[in-house]
Length: 217
Image 1 (cartoon, helix red, strand yellow):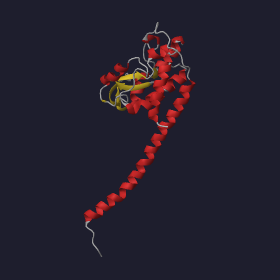
Image 2: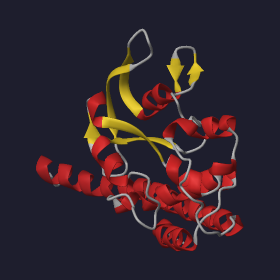
Image 3: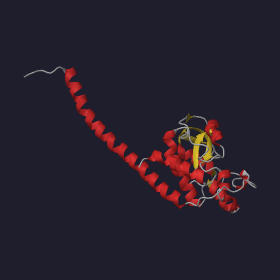
Image 4: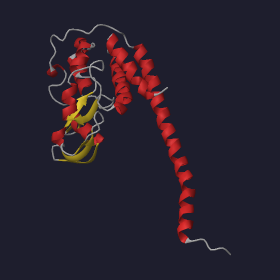
């Protein structure tokens, strides 16, 4: 009987495992790609359904017309705290339901945030932009519901710095620095606008279609 050194046996076993690992990873990657492609296709259909028009005047807009304060959703917890708890890890709250500790990932720029002083809850479709897209004609109650919507992808935890850079701009003027998030950002933007029947401008529509290309086909 031929004796095979232990080191060679270990190496052979390692090589035998590699194809299994590759096979296990490949289906997940393929599923993720299909998911992005399906989301992109759905967003394109919704975008095609939106009216294209010129932006309304900003006259009369103020943040308070949408959000004099965050609306409460669960007892003492307002919409902001609901989002912080949902999108963070290891989030600890005080008696007033305010997050005091946790770790958050900012998808716009990829930053890992470990202090509440570093984070903002961004409105994907900015309030001022929504105003010019048709929300100017809404009731106060509908604008408030829009600003505190935790059911649709309108509220997302991001770094304070990237939120300041974005301001009230649309996708024709600003896009997340992290290109890997463009698909998700565009599909979220379109989903929110479609639900609330907000119109898009021609330049906005072109910018969204360009971002959707990153979703795949």
